Length: 187
Image (cartoon, rainbow, N blue to C red; front, side, top):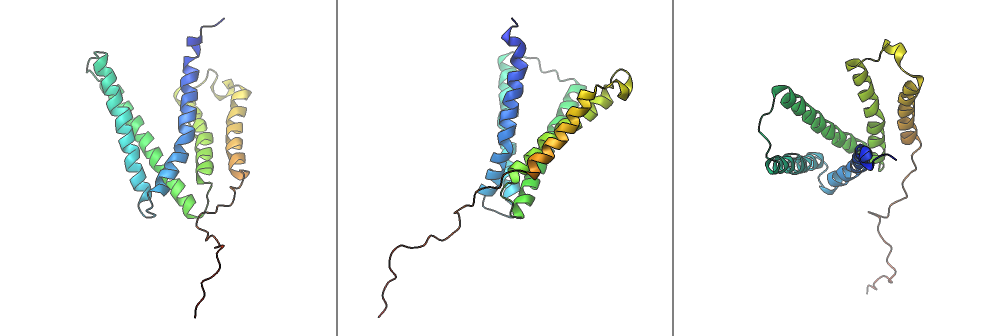
C-alpha cells in the first residue's frame, strides 16, 4: 500500500481547485458589492491586492523568519517569481474586467461563464508553453494521442459549459412587492 504522503500534492492541487473555483464568484460579488458601477472593479482589485499582501507577503515572511531562513535571493529565482506574481495579478485584473463587462451586459451568470473559459483555457496554454520549453522526445510526433485528446476535450468542455449553462432562476430583487393593504381613502 502506498504511503498517503505520496498523495499530498493531490490534496494541495484539490485545495487550489476549490479556492480558485470560488475565486471568481467571490470576486464578482465583491465587485458588485462595492455598489460603484464606474469604479467597483478597481475597488475590488485593491482588496485583492491587500489579500495578496496578507497571504503572499506577511505569511511567507513569518514562515521564513520562524524557520531561520537565510535572506539570499538569487537573481534568477527572484525575477522569475516576480514575473509569475505580475502575471497572476494581471490575470486577476483581467478576470475583474471580464466579469464587469459581462455583468454590464445584463448577464447574471458572469462568474460561471468567465471562470469556465479561464479554467478550460489555462491548462491548454500551460500545455503548449510547457511543450515548447520541454519538447517531447520525437518532437510533436512523440506526443500521445491521449494528450492531444485531453487538450481538445478541455477546449470542448469549456465551450459546452458556457454554451449550455443553466439559466439562473428569476430574481425578486428590485421588484416592487404588491401591498396587501387597502388603499387609503381620500376625502
